[in-house]
Length: 239
Image (tube, rainbow, N blue to C red; front, top):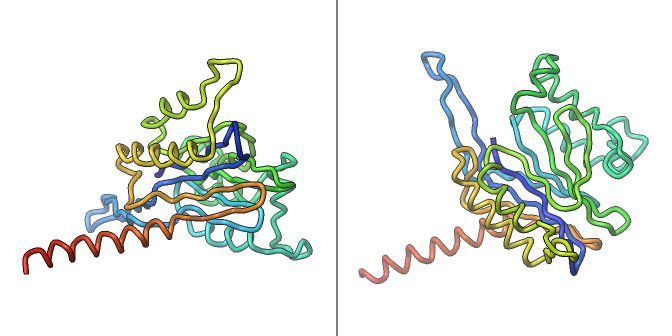
């Protein structure tokens, strides 16, 4: 599956941090019909638009690509247009997500509820207000004002998240943007105890009232350059 999370700041600059691992697990039948896991270790899981960013967990089904294309349609008159602001901010329902998962489960609603169907965490900055929205497999939406987490690595990071957001004083939880970024990185690192949550570097995006910034590909690129230079340094030391 994966590990995804959205973290809301509680003091200082209003912001949401989205983070996820970059491992994609696919199960392919072998010559005997047994399912064998095949991992892609650097699969991008965070995508950004004008006023939103999202990450997803669950089965990476083909219709996800079509869903992402539809989210980029800007003309409200286009039949493929998805009114994200209405659905996420006004409490609508994602019919597209519901249909996507029902198709994957051959119309079995109980299977959608019980199995690892795709679900999302969205972050938005409509009206310059960063918010977190969890999207259930059947399309329902719930807004979170602290953090939202999903995936098979969830059990390895819940204690850390609950500790960071505990309201044990009159001030309540005090999570700044720098703390949220560090917490996101730590949680994704810890989630790698789960066999389906891995990858070279975490995928990270920061959503403020004025901007949506994605850093996952940049982190991965810099890591690869650093690794290459360090290997060359070892080679040069033995010339």
